[in-house]
Image 1: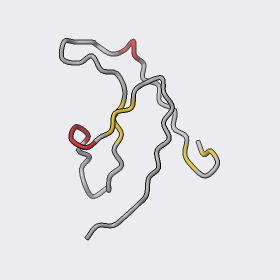
Image 2: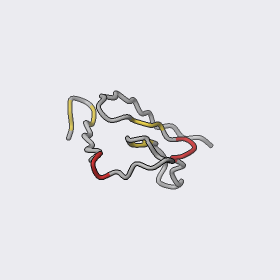
Image 3: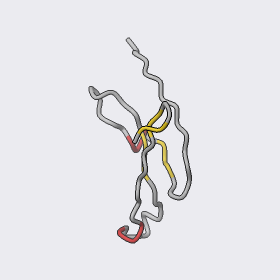
Image 4: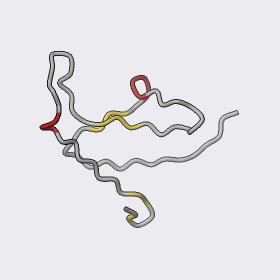
Length: 65
């Protein structure tokens, strides 16, 4: 869905579908823009987004040689 000069993305976390365990009490999504030539390293580099909040994220493309 396009909004103004950006992209609006609405995610439904479906919290009732999560199985809460001793090792995992967190709920949310991980976000990591990356090149399609590289695998996403979400655990190491991703940013966590908590449910129930609005986020404004600016992304710029750059080439590193």
